[in-house]
Image (cartoon, rainbow, N blue to C red):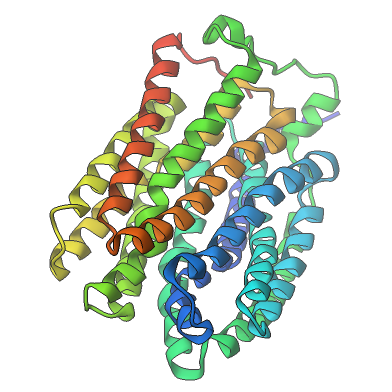
Length: 406
């Protein structure tokens, strides 16, 4: 019988990567539309900044919890099932948010939006890793760029339609667009991944000896990655969630903030691809440490500089510095855990990063309400980032040359 392993890194594997990237770019609208709509939603419902940030928190919680559940579905039934479920949830969530009579209903609908968006990140991220071996780092980085490509494309589009027709009509349009584009795309991904077929056909085991490589148990490593993911994204959420509102407070207007957010995430695309090449050469742990350190530097720059040009520059630098952090967790999982557990374990770490975004998004708004400015919120993000750097340093000091697994 012909070995299905021949399809790893084949032309078909790269084609699937392209389809996965398209799904991630479209589905990523669920994470960024709520950020752009924040000022309009706050004004319509007449609430404080902290309360207006809660729908984003619900979005991230939905995204995070669904990442674990949908990852397990992908491990068991293949990628089609979770992505179809996510597409339907995304459309229903946007439609429900558009019809929301109160902030609490809008927040719950955003939780469903987050659930739908989750299907286009963690499960697909793990799925893509099964189709690549030698070029796994760059493949994962290219796919993970879809989340930032969504962030570069969607904010100005959403902002334009909010100004033209209102945020409710814009949400209805997004719901229809997701259904019309994502369901046809997912049908192109029906073939099962070759790595899964290899494991079930009795090929060599891919379980790494974690105790021999890091000297800690698989549970301890998973826990540390979860904590690191939470901390790095509390730090990351400050500029990503509140940049539009921050620019409005400084007098530059939400349109300038949306442009800066788009620039930040466009630079994040460059960052993720670049860090993908780096990761293939230095491994996931070193990439995590490098990205986390640079993210801390960018956060520090927000403290002294508040000019319009300076904020554009710092937004670009922030995107360039932190884009490789989240994909590095998927690489670490694939380096130190068996591939048959990829969906659930990557989903667990991604859930932690999304909880970090949710916690950081709400926390920054609450700190703003208490202090009247975002300075303390930036300092809070820097403190969480230092904890993430400490975990990366701890794991790297225990690491021996990284194992190679299919």
